[in-house]
Structures are given as structure tokens and as C-alpha cells.
Length: 90
Image (cartoon, rainbow, N blue to C red; front, side, top):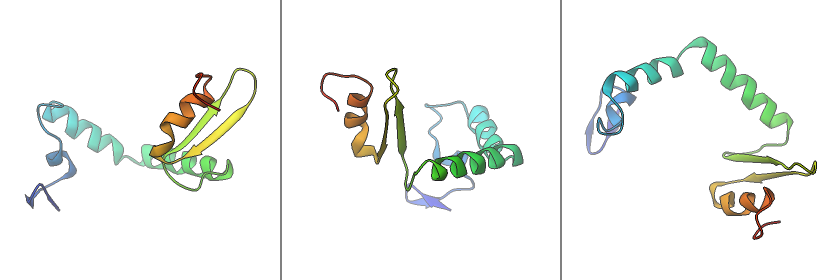
């Protein structure tokens, strides 16, 4: 793998040590590779597709009044805020 203009040994090498302690980065990367987490990711992805998701990020807003809004894409964060009841929303 290459990142930041040079070779890296693992994904953990891409995280600045000022952000997280190296041991924590390694712990999180190893956890992300576990069979349990991979199975959970598959279950969640299947549930999202069944709910109509077709991309990522897929944002679901279930309001207290029972109205549900779904949004696709990071450019929808501002719109989804409105779905939660902000005065600037839907």
C-alpha cells in the first residue's frame, strides 16, 4: 500500500499518532477485521439495501411524529438536519 507519497505496511500506518495512540489504532484495525464485525457489517448493509439504500452515506431520520426521511450523500447533511425538525429543513 502507498499513502502520503510512500509505502505503508498497514492501514494503521495512515493514522497520525497525534490523533490516536498507536496501540489503539492497531486494536481498532484488528477489531474491524474480525469475523464478527464483518458479519455485522454484512447484516447492516443488507438491512440498508432492504430499506432502499443505494449508496453511502445513507442517512435515515425517524422523527417523533412518525415521519421518516432518507437521504443519500454527504451533501445532504444540511437537508437531513431539517428532517430532524430544524427550522431550515423539510
